[in-house]
Amino acid sequence: MRVTALGPIENLEMIEVDSQPLRPGQVRIEILACGLNYVDSLFIEGKYQVKPPVPYHPGSEVVGRVTEAADDVTTLSVGQRVFAPVGSGGFSSEAVVAAARALPIPDSLTDGQGATFMQSYLTAWFAFTERMEVREGMTMLVLGAGGGIGLAAVDVGVALGMRVIAAASSEDKRRLALDRGAFATIDVLTEDVKVRTRELSGGGVDVVYDPVGGDLAEPSLRALAPGGIFMVIGFVGGIPRLPANFVLLQNRSVVGVDWGYWVGRNPEGNARMIREVLGAIGEGRLNPVEPRIYPMSRAVEAMNDLKNRKVAGKVALVPVWD
Ligand SMILES: NC(=O)c1ccc[n+]([C@@H]2O[C@H](COP(=O)([O-])OP(=O)(O)OC[C@H]3O[C@@H](n4cnc5c(N)ncnc54)[C@H](OP(=O)(O)O)[C@@H]3O)[C@@H](O)[C@H]2O)c1
Image (cartoon, rainbow, N blue to C red; front, side, top):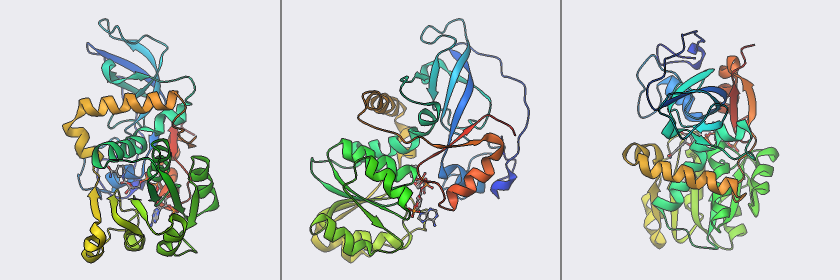
């Protein structure tokens, strides 16, 4: 699937192209599922900080089965199920990737889970290992905790020993966060986030993880404990203006987290993180959600459901053209 001009997501179209020949070191995979992320719609609309060149083929993370391997490939064999961070072009029935970038995935992981963990779990892993130092028993408020990025932060935060409060708008979303170990939840539609966070944490949280922004950012900043860290992750609710006086007071910090920028400069570090996260999933320490599945031909509907806050957890597309 592709767009030839950045703009409304309805511009997304299905096209048929010939299969690419394999070059040395490459494998061909039949795509079984592709993760759909909020940021895919931002790319298509031209609203992301970086504009992709057109024609643009969305879809950055896939699970597939190897159907062909170049003669020199020794690490993978035909029939193996692999995860591949393709970067773009995942909304497709087939991909050609460097064998070195395709990783066999644990049998315990479904196609949908394998195709939807990377962006959300790697962002959280990067945030908690490269952008701050996690201490056992820290308290953390996660906003958008039933969305892709937030839910992964709940899971990773709990696995690293944090006590997590999950803020979300629906019962379904809060349930997913509780299932991943959050000790309390806040209904963002009916409760005061600052007041409830302070009550639930016993005075203030050590960390706020914010993929939402908008009107939720300031009350969350004000719910930080002395020395607390506000992690800026995303802006689905709008880019907030944070009052500097509440950062100064009690020595708080605001920390930007830009996983994509870091990946561009640290591909090896990111490959190591993918292996670490896959290892933790294989050992059962992390539990990616089973995504809601849509046929690829309904990608626009899937994106609209995500943008309209109708999805609890993640979305994956499967190459079915109905
Ligand atoms: N910093 C990084 O390195 C990095 C990496 C990847 C993605 N991101 C960013 O993280 C953000 C979240 O992505 P995601 O994949 O988690 O998205 P998502 O799955 O759609 O979840 C976002 C959540 O935000 C909440 N929300 C509040 N106001 C909203 C609004 N006006 N529109 C839509 N959702 C709203 C919704 O939860 P409730 O209904 O519970 O309020 C929703 O579940 C995006 O901005 C993305 O670009 C950042």
